[in-house]
Image 1 (cartoon, helix red, strand yellow):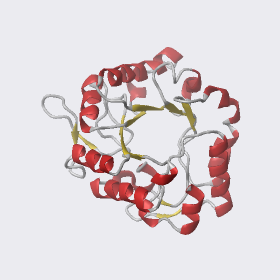
Image 2 (cartoon, rainbow, N blue to C red):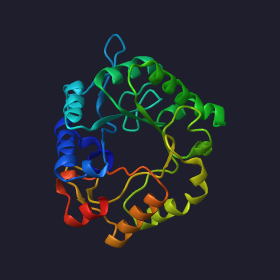
Image 3 (tube, rainbow, N blue to C red):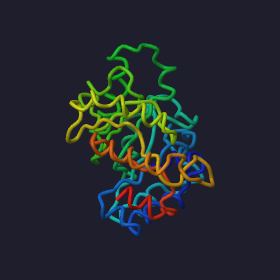
Length: 262
């Protein structure tokens, strides 16, 4: 996932480099398979309301095809609200058209992030929290492509109890993580009771692995976690059967990070 390493500095070249690195480092041979583009890729909709990619992504279908030729899968990001967390175009009231577009681009994974939907819907009862995810799940089912559906609403409303029922394949169980042991350890300590809700096709997602070169800038820096803290996070996420989602610069993996991830 591009967010913790590049945030708004992500572009087509960096995504292609990540796909290449999956192969050359051996990550792909160890089961890592999704190259997921997070927020800041979209542009304002055109006059017909169609979603566009911005100048940093001149041809999204070509990017998808590049990733697929390496035997990998392509992930993308949107929000059920009118805008994403970073203020780019979201999918509110365009769900069916966006799902069809994602399928046409060859998308294999959709991260759907709550963000501005909270301004649209003030109701926090479970049925209101579930509604936007049901709408997009139905739209994805109507498309002609199998797309993994990742719910991101930070564990509100006990999402682990209903995430699978609304079409989710994984759901965030926490707020955003970070490369501080205080944050990672608090998240880890909160997950044990959620284990019964995870299983094949529907997983608890306690957010990304905080290893390698990251920082949300154009010039990544080393994680602030110590080596032992990184080993502990990786171990606990494996015990939890959590999705192992990296968000580091894969072109700058040192030997320790390679050993940790593989």
